[in-house]
Structure formats: structure tokens, C-alpha cells
Image (tube, rainbow, N blue to C red):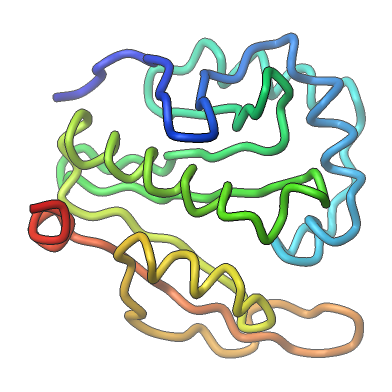
Length: 182
């Protein structure tokens, strides 16, 4: 299935809804969070205009799913299914929680679980993969809870604050997801 649309996804504590152009201000503020930038390896400084263009582009895109993570109607982060390879039924996934008070609460794990379920069960992906930096063990544990398995390490993939950091590749396959859901 190439594009099942962009439905709103409901979890126990969060709602995932498609990012819109109206989310640019919240996203700009989130991209200024130093801890989020470190955990995602984001060196770049984004202008408000660039974020506005990005939000408008992803809202209209039919080849990726950019979702706002909402708690009680406020956007605390985003989860994205992108880098779609239709021929091989695979994609990349990424998640970030910008709001410091919402970290370490399981909300990122819930967002990953909802988006992974959507990617496998609705979009019909066979494989979903991600990259996570070695200095983020909290995220690694979260991804393992969802069903992602370590596949390999890209050594010295990120240069951060004078240190080289490894990036781990993790993935989940549809049969593994289906077996864990049974």
C-alpha cells in the first residue's frame, strides 16, 4: 500500500497527528532545546522561515509521515516515518521529545510504538530502522521495548563537543512485530 493517508493515531496518553504549517512556532522552540539537539546529533541552527517551509512541505508530502506528539493538546515533540523505500517495503523512523518535563515518562516509547504499528500494519512496511547515538542509552532501552534490535554500529559517526560518538543501527521486521503483538 503506497499511501494510506495521514490519520490521527491515538495512544493511551498521547495523540499523534500530522504536522501542519501551524506547528512551525512550536517546532522552532523545540529546535532550540540543547538536550534534544545533543541527543539527535543536530548541529545546525534553523531559521524560523526554514522551519515554516519544512512544516508546509511535510504537511503536503505523500511519501512521509511527520507527526506531532501531543499531550493534552500541546505538541511536546515529533515522530517521523521517512526515507521510504517502496520497492523494499522499508523506512526510517525518528522521534524527539522537546519538552524536558515529558522526557523519561514513556511518552517517546508510546509514540514509537504507535508509529511502528502504523508503519507495519497500515503502510505495509517489512522493515523499519533507526539510528541512535551511543550516548543515549535511555533511547536504546525505549527502542528495545518497542521491539527494535541492534544490527550494527557506525563507528565515530558524530563529532560532538570534541568527542567522536558511535551511532547504532536498530530495526524491527514485520514478522518480529507481529509475533510480539500476538
